[in-house]
Image (cartoon, rainbow, N blue to C red; front, side, top):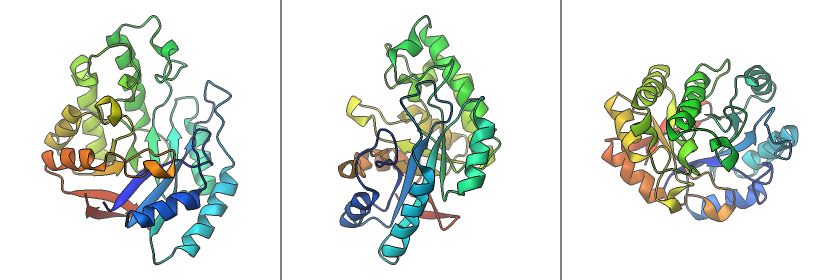
Length: 261
């Protein structure tokens, strides 16, 4: 294990634990690099899920970087929840805080989040997947800099059907992957849902990404507690190897670096 590129602490509305707990756990695991990626979901449909105090977050991360310099590389990043309505606000947020690392994710489409049952009401599987994938495709042209595409296939994580994203809309998935490759963005292998038997994106999409020329993958536990750091790492490494990608791409000091997967 060398890096975990997706972490949420108490600075996220659903995270638990002080960031320093995560740093100490990462050092215990002998990681070279960790990227903190607190939630920034502006104009999110559920007002109870509020973006935290990002000014305090970045100040705290500067302190941790100095304290642990020489022991571990730390990135102070954000997971931006993209919608067409908030993209200008997202750009302003990034300009203000200048995060070290940005995951561009889609958590909301058609006014709801596919994590919740209400998103699927009145939609066929084809429609539910299509709405989500069109939002992801739109997000790739976001008017701000970002490094990685987050948890592609998120729509199926809590879906009331077993159809795969790729089987329902291979055309849209290919368009997303092709644009991801063309833009030189990193595709994360998110293992947060692996207990249900699947990483995001699922195996068929990771292999398709490689077949289309994609070479930039990274490991992302999507940890919300320190003990979840690097969870299911071996599953991600195995899939990357199957795709012929032996190094993960991490953003360290503002530059992309290759680390062993």
